[in-house]
Image 1 (spheres, helix red, strand yellow):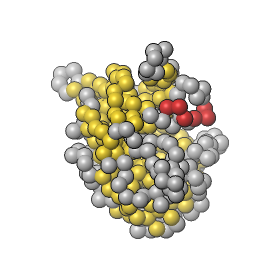
Image 2 (cartoon, helix red, strand yellow; image 1 turned 120 degrees about the vertical axis):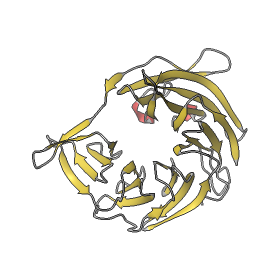
Image 3 (spheres, one colour; image 1 turned 30 degrees about the vertical axis):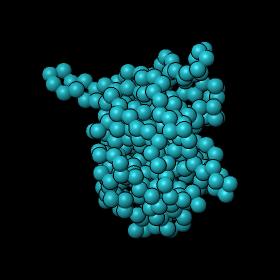
Image 4 (tube, helix red, strand yellow; image 1 turned 90 degrees about the vertical axis):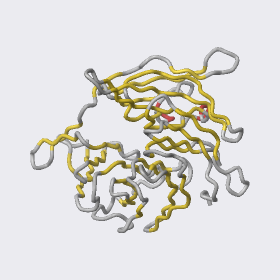
Amino acid sequence: MDVGHCILDGNADAVEFCPHDSFYNVLAASTYVLQEGDCPSRSGCITLFDVDADGGRLELIQKVETAGIFDIKWSPELLQNPARPLLAQADADGCVKIYSLQCSDSDDSEMRAVQEWMEQGYEKWSSSCPNGKHTTLRSGLLRFDIQQPMLVYTGSDDCKFCCWDLRDGPSNLVFQNTKVHKMGICCIAKSPFDPNTLLTGSYDECLRVWDVRSTSKPVNESSICLGGGVWRIKHHPSIQGLVLTACMHNGFAIVKFEGDQADVVETYEKHGSLAYGADWQRGDVIVGGRRKSSAIATCSFYDRLLRVWKPEGDVFI
């Protein structure tokens, strides 16, 4: 069921619902626009929305102009003052910028972003391998283990999937898999429920489920093909084994997995361009007593489209 939609001012590449109790209604969307010519530039913006899935409301709160944005992320709830959630952006200037969100003094309790809080370079990530060679990750991605922050997972365009232990100096290569992914790795998502489960997405269109205790092959060796490059994976915030995926040329898919079984339980195909951004809205999910889920936000790149919708099937059972 569609809740609402909006055409953004730039190419849409990421959406993030705020995970903090008092701000579940706040949705951030980011854009990236390349202006070509003699003096090329890369611009973007963060747009904040007020979302009421039950009431069908998607209202603009504020826009913040910035450099072109690669990705955005709200801070974990336990790491800050709950009255002032922080939103970080990684941008085309090679910086990480962090904004604070807080209630205004007006009667309508409008939310507003305030000044930049931190800025630092992130152009490359380097480590030294056990063989003494110095390696630099430039064309790929990096994810910290949410249960064991001393571990870092990396994936790259050369199909290498690696884990590093930062407690060792230089960093120790815990494992490296170069055989499973047939094309570049797009995303890595550790399960917030099971410390041994991790998912990867690739340009080869497969979603793979890993047991990090055995990384020679995915839990389900054939994995599951989603029909498009798996650009983003989002675990449901309260239901284990349920993920939302952005599948580039094939829209969005909700996937259930358990052990060595993974199945698509619902697809969403109302975007006409590259499916890039996706996120679940936080909130109570009461299956027996009905209440169910809040909403899902998705965005697509070239058509600049943001959509908020609810699953139509019983994906939470």
